[in-house]
Length: 279
Image 1: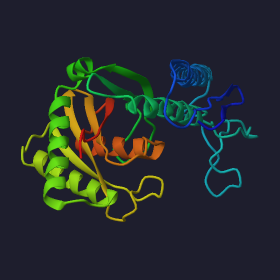
Image 2: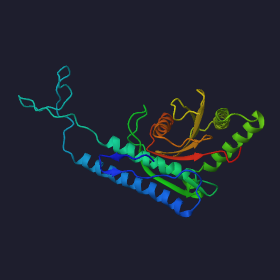
Image 3: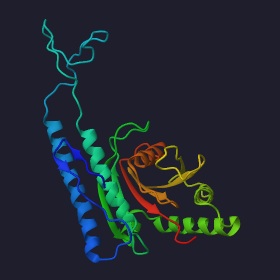
Image 4: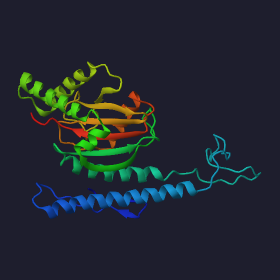
């Protein structure tokens, strides 16, 4: 995890070791380091939010008219305007830093998911907008017993089985494919399976990966987000992956945009990574 800070207060110092884990002490060091940094950034974010809401300002206060050199800035009703800076929202950077630390922890935990454990990351999406604007805020990151995740997201096991089936079919019918083509073929097969169910509460949304960080190496590579509407305001997202990239801030925004296109009233998003269990 790269060093960083929020408002000069919290410094991220985690140094994650490369290679294969070979000792329990190394395992615990990495886990505790990521948890500590994430917790510190979350505390800093809460402090910034409290300070933000404590500020006294009037949203209806008049502003200098457009066309004026000070246009858009707050003013007063006095004959001699008192110019004040436009109110700056300091939460955005803090939210992004907290999400980045949570994503680092989630990626680390996802690499340790298995038959009995599943990494889950939860986002508060109440301030996100269907046009892709606004911010998602990270609520929690955990490695849970798989049955607990299944209780929150009832179609988890079905999505895993359908993903395994897609990988098996592609491997059997297409032979050995390069990673990019294999991933696209698996995602396409899975989408056909889910689209065939014609269930409005269980959908497969395509993400076209356009940025260099996420691409598998082909301009037509795709990733599938399987969306399960669990209850009013809550959506489970199964992030189907065949490559090695972790969940990034850009990818998080992409997932939230897909969710809001399908279910505009979403308030909470639970994301879990699903990979084929065999190829």
